[in-house]
Length: 379
Image (tube, rainbow, N blue to C red; front, side, top):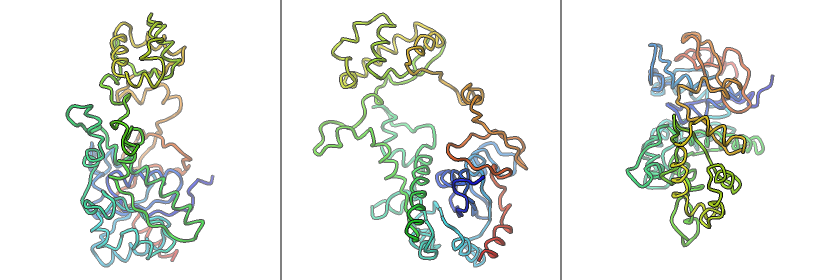
């Protein structure tokens, strides 16, 4: 069966999460992704519980469907092999710091000069031309500088989202930009040099709804989206646990007020429309929070679901493999890894390729000789 990205060759020089997440999606959609690693391997191989084979869970998830080639780029032989791979590739992706990329001739502009039909994607911390352009950046730095940690603090001490959110969001944006650039390359016959700066990308992502009234010049009010900033926006404690509920539309609120025996609140001028509710959202969410302990979680689900008010359980990470929705849709894929044994991997959204035996992450250097021979023969 033909896959969406059949025939697309990707050289992946990225490490850890942001770039590997981007290229893992390409591999899942049918691209041939060659992961180029230094002799010690991607550091992500050693994050989390590891059996001693350099195949930690972090790496197993972010590098599915790739082939691994080990090159020492500081040697003449390694540099020569990389030149062959760049000439062979449709796409080259890296997460090197700008100064290191320039030293190796791997900045996006240089890659396209070496292969005029290549799409070169350079993930970097900050955009070219700014005072922070050459500074290193990691997920925590970007969460803080993009305003996300302040949002998480909800007016108190800043806090990080307990997920490598910036890495994954920027990686996903990079995937979209890369695919658009491939389309442009196919239309024009010319390669494209792309730089994906973490800070600017994450800031744009945050500001979609959080720029608020500051989108106007001069500003009509403060930044932020009141509903998401409310301290009472959280899973609601019930008599026996907690549930997540989003009472959102005018109809939702009228029904909810009826169900809790307060129909008059639907005509309260503070709550009649979404505009008015947004201005009084904190007190409204506080009212909801005070109401939910009166019933069990299941009682609330049984009460609200028939009225199409969105409500659901609050899962722990350990609950996810048994979530009935995920079980029914076959979300977790059983894979028998050649060294790690049975694995349970989350499904990737999109036109996933069917490639038996290529659904797992590679052992370090497992494909070096094979891939380099293929590149030589292709040239």
